[in-house]
Amino acid sequence: MRSGCLVSVVVRFYEGLDVRNKALGNEVHQKKRKGDMEAIWLAGVKSASFVPNGLTSYMKEGMRTSVEAILLVQEHNHPHILLLQIGNTFCKLPGGRLKPGENEIEGLKRKLSSKLGANSPSFQQNWQIGECVAVWWRPNFETAMYPYCPPHITKPKECKKLFLVHLPEREFFAVPKNLKLLAVPLFELYDNVTRYGPVISTIPQQLSRFQFNMVSS
Image (cartoon, rainbow, N blue to C red; front, side):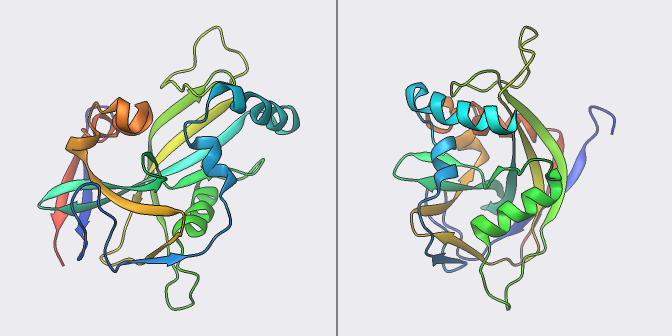
């Protein structure tokens, strides 16, 4: 795809969707899950605790590859991103770490079903994974990530890819009890590094080349 091209993205309206930092309404069903250790990896951990865990994984499996989903909905004719909130402050995109050798698309589908799947035969999600819109690198065992791999780094510790995921007209989600599913508008994410970190706060820029078609059911 040529750079500068506008790509059309359909953004669905979700009934019961609260504005900004409010949990989704009755579209979300809570489900129990034991403590999500992967969330701890991504939850802004301090360098001191990150080093031993990351080093053990790196020595065993090499560079960590993770995939995350950009799920778009709309409220008041403005795109919102669905985020998972851990505790009272930290937010992350749905997704997580791939298994060694796992395909990125299939791995993201697996992660989305694990994080948001309803665990019911009546609600089987068919995740439609779109294009990769951003790639981030972790050069060392600290928490900082960059949208490029520094030239002096020959063995980065993690590569994270963000994919657009196209949602159907109506979708049901289930989330663990220790998490909340939020719909956050693009205008709040933009340049809000303090609140959302560099990866999420730059999503509005990554999506600026897309043309949004707002659809109300």
